Length: 248
Image (cartoon, rainbow, N blue to C red; front, top):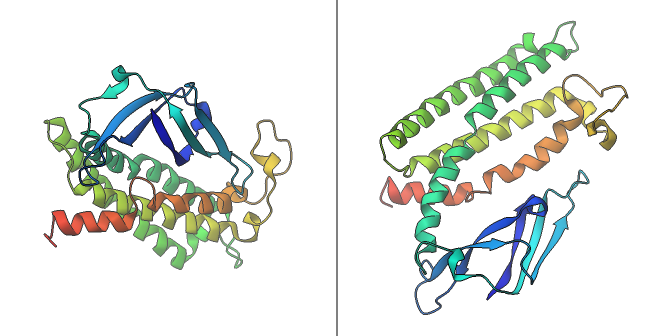
């Protein structure tokens, strides 16, 4: 039987299954004695409580487990080897979190929005030297991130597993995404202050607020503060790099 809770479960209200790392042996050190279970979300004893965010949406949830029975067949791999499997999954997850394709789309959107945003001096922000400098820095970092990710993917294609480079990709990718969020807010200015939730609904017929997606700039900025936390916080990733690469 499984007892405990999991918080910040993203879109768990739509899930049919959840995988959990559960402690199955208290007599060994904490990295061991953990098993990997696949649990049906309709199992008796599971309660899901939505967490409503500032934008009014329940993107994340708390999940409570009270004497939840899990069939033996739902054990993934060997008992007490769950953390070993999880570490492998996390390296792939962190590689994916780097978000190069998403970064390219957002960079293109930044340039488009900058070209539509007046700079207050008779031109637009795409012609503003200081803003162009910030954009150039981001584009250079994104291209370097892409090449690093491609090297990791090339290694995967011949059967190798990602190592500490996945932590590097995760750190750089998430912090780069947050830098883009800051530029979107800079472009939106006061246009990102009004919260008009109906503007984000299908069929909205009102007047858009500001150029581009200005109304969502602040919401995206605040929501994406989580990027440097999930998948293992960036502080933990730096510890992994220090140990694995530098031997500290």
